[in-house]
Image (tube, rainbow, N blue to C red; front, top):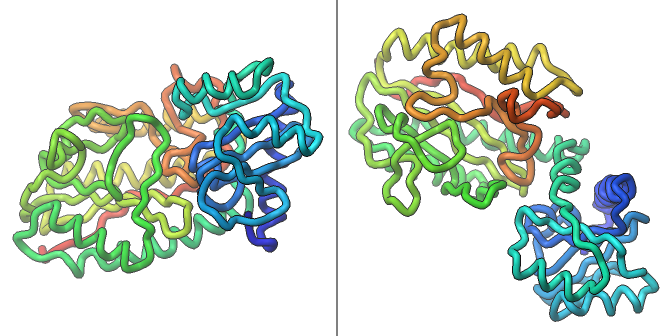
Length: 364
């Protein structure tokens, strides 16, 4: 199923999940979400990863044909899994975890029938927690992705032409990213979170609220995807926010940079500098084990002190967080969120793929 050179990494992840199952009194977990399949097997396939609290792991595959390995078992449907477990002397679980945050109700009912007598419990938090703490391998993948992402952004000012609209510039940036090797896929956790490769905002369009839980706004080009660029022409005096995804190897970096077209207002410069100061302060003062709510509260304190809290994390519509983890999905745990939602949250690693530096887009 996975390269032999990758076995130690898969073993580490499997054991992490198995330990969590054991600590919660759960016998096994059945995984079918694409992001979690990739995490547990290093590839996406149609089927399931099955992990027991004792550390046994099987990959039940429907498609594609041709996958091999001692742990790979081909099935036609989920109802075949119990039979295959029996053939291998693996007991049917008394308590079986499934990803209830992403699994449709009808699928859950099939699992209940396929594992008759098993108690179905939610394993979503187990997978979120496992993926929140990155292995050394994952940190290296994010680092490599971030380098290519940064190299792509360095070419943005070279593709800008006077008279461009926001969507025209975004398309050129998407082309740069794809030529650099971006897979183009933008995996987001959350059933109602949608966007294509990222966002570019110019002028007043940035203040258009969206239905999504993003700090950024934008009316978009259609009510079917109401976020981002809407055809606004880029003019002198505008700032241009570029927030594009950098998925080059299955791991997402989320990098925001702000450009200017000519001179911009003193208020815009002050707000931009504050965003940089907040990023630097949080990176310097928080560490493993810090409370996620404290990140948000410190950032808010700085915004209030600068009399810019009206613009903090949005203007017409605000987001309730100041940062989030990255990984296989662009918005993984932990989340630096407001106190009322995260009084027990912990920060596992404050390193981030985001930033707020301002670049020069066109002549002053």
